[in-house]
Image 1: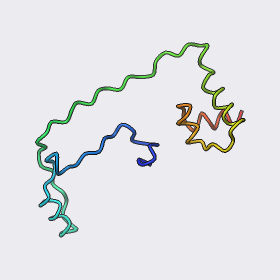
Image 2: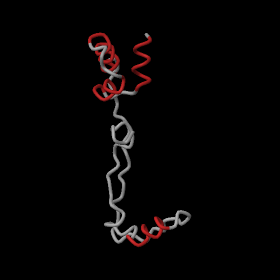
Image 3: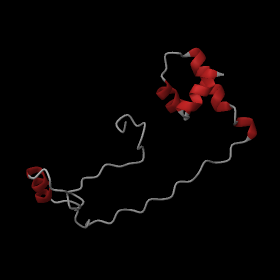
Amino acid sequence: GIADGDVAQGIKGMDPVASGQLSRAEIERCQNDPTARLQASESKYKLPPIAPRKGPRYTPVSRRQDRPDAIAWLLRNHPELTDAQISKLVGTTKPTIQSVRDR
């Protein structure tokens, strides 16, 4: 989940009342009336533009086997590690770990 850092890694927390997107009165109005929907007001702060993500860099042919080798070494020498821990350590996905485990 989000708290574990598995998903939504680049998201920063923000207070909608402090940023002017919602008022306390609007929140209380919706708490008192369960059928009411929140109406966001215009934010008084401009949000910074989100920079486009750059894609993966070129990986030389000689280094393409490094990550699967690292996964295999971790699986062989530290079987107590979970897939999530290995994916964080090596920087890979769970399907890649599963394919290394199956070969």
